[in-house]
Length: 294
Image (spheres, rainbow, N blue to C red):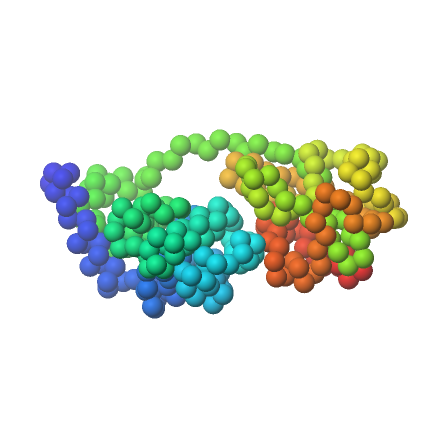
């Protein structure tokens, strides 16, 4: 069979299999263009089981494209908190705003118009389903159950178990960082990360490069205009792995004499409602909760 013939048979075989075998998922129960679109963005680089609760919360808060377009960005990011790859959330909201402005709130039907929206790819649910259920990259492919086995060169040549061939991953760069949990009364110090780069534009616990000793940490805080009340206490150590870098974090906790400039001071309620902290800082959440009790 020629390669062109094999490719021509793929869509019909795949869609017939999908109609018969697709899982029951929240975004498939009422597949309006907006609901499917949100699911497609969330499912980029994220497992289905991880997406489900986020999807349901997101649609409850933003049931329409108009609601998403009009929301404060911080509220959108808060609902995305822990899902990662926050640029997806920003692109999704920007695209919703374009849909409202240019298309009267209707997700455009043409391929060209869809492709023009920020953050939109060209993902087919049936192909994603095949990868999730049959042609498994992390385990033995279930070739005997595959609707495409008769047109699959990997199966025909007996090499399906060896595919895909992946390039050897580059070792991650390790960065030592010192994180500060600074409290004034029942408020915590946060700051916003730069607009570009890792965790761009997100809120973070104040931090700096290097694993600072207690004396070094005290000097650093003084240089930032922070006046300590009772000195510094060691906080938990933590590691967070990104795709290309690892953060090894040392933490220091302190109560401070005033709300030093250069930081944003937030309450526990603020954190719950409006400020999204990336999961990189998850290990510090119990200490934050305790510190905010005052």
